[in-house]
Amino acid sequence: MKPSSKRVIADLEELAALTTDERGAQRVAWGPVWRKTRDWFTAKLRTELGLEPHRDGAGNLWATLPGASPRGLVIGSHLDSVPGGGWLDGCLGVLAGLEVLRRARAAGTPPLTLHLVDWADEEGARFGRSLAGSAASAGTLDAHAELAHLVDRAGVKLPDALAENGVTLDGMGTARAYFDALGAIAYLELHIEQGPVLESMRKPTGLVLGTMGVERHNLRFVGQAAHSGAAPIHLRKDAFLAAAEFALACRDISVKYSGKTPRTRVVATCGVVKVEPNFVTAVPGSTEISIDLRALDATVLKKMLADARRAAAKAARTHKVAVSWSPLLHITPRPFDPALMTIARTAIKEVTGTAPELPSGPLHDAAEMAAVVPTAMIFAQSSPGISHTKLEDTPRPALDKSIRAFLIAVDRTVAQLAGSSTVSASGARSRTPARRPR
Ligand SMILES: [Zn+2]
Picture (cartoon, rainbow, N blue to C red):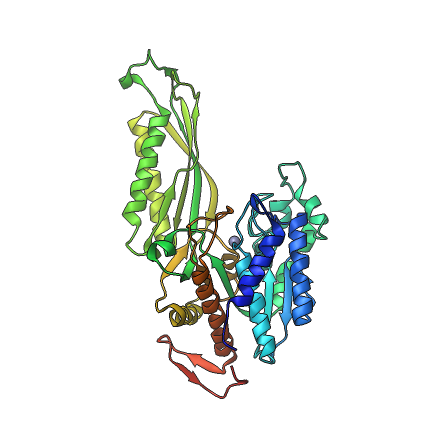
């Protein structure tokens, strides 16, 4: 069957109409609209495929189409959204996965067992811990230590919100064993880019190289608060000026380490600045500033951090203030699987002529999967290049091409992993006796 985006786009529109209000999508994990979304999705699996989905201990929703081999290809993303989110973030990948199952079922028995997963609470929008479901499956989540104390804005504790959905912290600890029992040999995900890179390149779809590593720290510069009229410039210990010099130095660091291609681009962001005492006639006595450094290359990320430490020390010396660091987050880069990327690259080229390559700055469920199983990911262009807002969109022609490229990539992955055909990096396909016509 020729891959088509028609049913996927129709499903996306249907879901948007069902779960969006004037502020945007409202499918926040563990809440009523999210449950309604999953009921809708479950009904589709039942009526169109006769499949009964099952839930693991972390609340991830799985649908399995048994194949000739028990070895499994996992396709997934997330149906949850941020409050006031867009119509594609997460849903695109899950509903493209539904189309994968439809096509496979129509063609007979797939050579591999196909698992479609809707990861629970990818966004972490309500309690602040993103990727909870996929991290539980990857075995990288310590549910009791990381989740037990979390509370939402209304004062609801996360364990209570989980209980409303039949999920417990102990149960989350069983998700890895559930995943291991699937016998997964690959993971594929289609997702909207959520940034402006593909749009700026005028490309409808692209290959994701991996997710960037993150070094996130909070710095505190401490000098001496003083009267703005009484303190001569040369006698001041201005903590804000030190932080400001540090911020500019971080900008220079990101320029210094950025190459010309998306693959080698790095970013540095100072997103939070808190000045004290924070009034117009006071020389700032202390200033807190955050730094968020991201790069796909672990060595580059390390060098960026070392440079940032030197820049902070220099700025502190210049302004006669002290500086201290406290780490907030450290994530290693998660490069995707070269063999699966070759297949995906070929599929994208087949549909669009070129396959631009870019890293993902945001994390995705695929980043958790990359730690436990060969993983690849395809991005659909964002236009405008923003997400987590109702303005999020992908133009229909780009959406169509992204979905078709993904469906082809899945077909080829199944064929290659099942050994029924091989795909060379140049895109030439040689067929050995096929299990079934495709
Ligand atoms: Zn997402």
